[in-house]
Length: 220
Image (cartoon, rainbow, N blue to C red; front, top):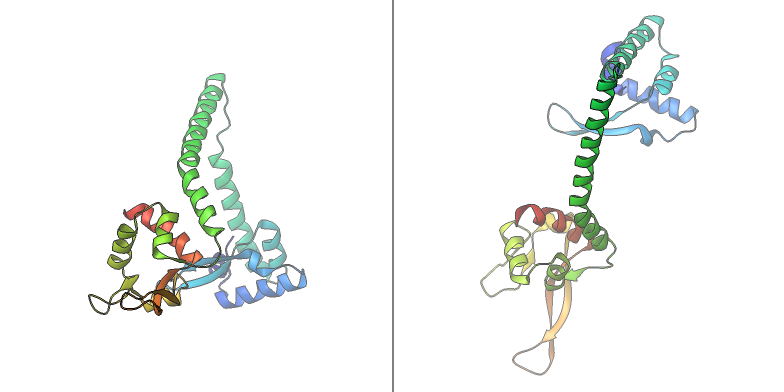
């Protein structure tokens, strides 16, 4: 049961219910963050609530009045009744066969999803294991793309831009702030002399590679 639902049932303010849960967790020497879950409020802002099992809900209610405890207890019974209602126990042999067939079909569908996602998961794991940042050309290799195709995507999706037609690529500030891209000084050959010149180059971070692997797969 969520702290928001406990708040609605008892009439207590949600911040007060959350404070009670934090106090309870502290006294039980448990990490309150293990109960935490993010939700979006009516203004689409990220907020935190706590999800409690039956045992922790009962423990929390010991400090509440009998009237409030009864409201929550009745709600728990409703929830448990809904779970029991969803469990269809076969009565006849035919029903048992039908249930078994349904379970086989569900397992087949789930295995199909797992098989379909396996290459993506492997790619993400491989990208996440890379160290440091890489240039756009190397990032394209990691992602299995041509450099020009990756540059086109990055430019079209406001990751990188050019101040002028002949300028080097630069990263948009939100991508820098999010830790997806970074700027790095590198030495490259100077066409006008034999000396190397120092330029600022856009680099894709390890986190950026993982995000790109997820986004590009759905848009390219």
